[in-house]
Length: 351
Image (cartoon, rainbow, N blue to C red; front, side):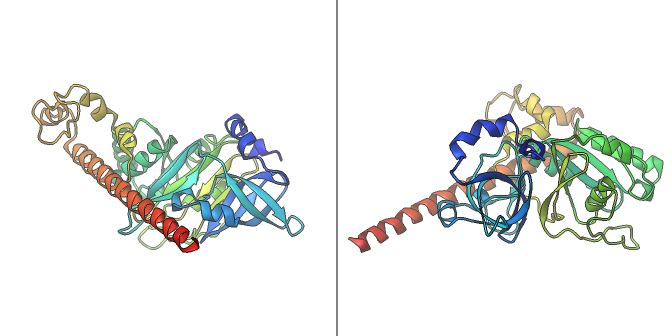
């Protein structure tokens, strides 16, 4: 195996010179679990930890290595462990607001080519939640493909309605399949290509890990039987990168209950292209599309040219993104001011 087989292409080669260190090599983060790491290169996969200097330099959780990142690593203990000394810039990424009240980014995965947004045709189907995943992908410049699973649990008419609804939300490709009958799985398998990185996104129990097992051809990862309601049971507990026999790479992720959006203005516009296009026709350049006169978006909604429910979700997500972005910037300013105060105090104590 070569680094190129793990996704180390010309983009990363262009950054290699400035990140190269004597006695070190390049590797990719293959798993993250509560602050511990696994890294993978051409010949091995070993546990790794941050160097003291790198840990000191990182002042935001978002800058910590995540699954899919490329790093400069120094191997030790007869190449059975490693120390991470530098982290490459990210070409693409998937992130969300941290769960709870804290206003910060949480990295899901980095350097992903395609995100498979997985929703069940049964209990999990939620167009509003789907829009949030699509915004997450657009925010990080990741191509989305929507996967509808558990088609065996609904009628063909119900499946057709759900497919039509998804297509009204996004121009992205949609694949409907069943892990039980296998229908649609070949179309899914043909989307993965050697040397490319894919990430599975979705709620707990929608069948993400089962999809990986089917691609591998064996039950390499634990799954649990569905409940009597048809809902799946959560299994994946950490983010990990799996290299398939055909050379594609899949990142499995735990199910997400919260999917907050921070500073994803461009992502919101990409996820709601029709609203972004109409915005150019509004009387005011900074139109919020709520109260201003001459708003082309609101006019289109009133004429029935835009779906009112989709409009309401657009306004909600736009406000949420802007609110959290302002809160995040304010928090960063306070954190930086506090950091300068601490450094100044330490210097005075030495003097």
